[in-house]
Picture 1: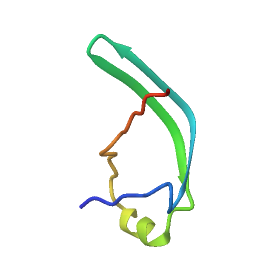
Picture 2 (picture 1 turned 90 degrees about the vertical axis):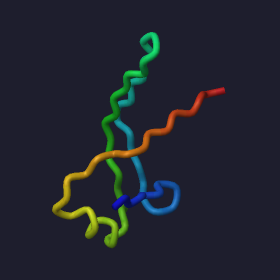
Picture 3 (picture 1 turned 180 degrees about the horizontal axis):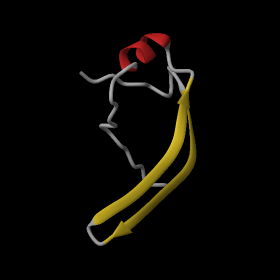
Picture 4 (picture 1 turned 180 degrees about the vertical axis):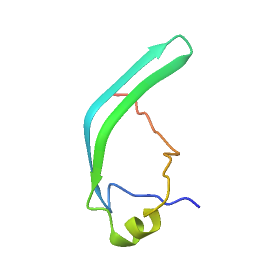
Length: 62
């Protein structure tokens, strides 16, 4: 089962450290941050479970 936190509508995200580097045909990245103001129903679904991020989106800066 997947649960999506829409940070535009449902919560706030604060990224403390983001590092993205391209090596040949690979993209290496690290992210350190915190998601706050998560709705209680979402937190209840997450409680006691191991969580795995399933989507990462990169956008090119113009």
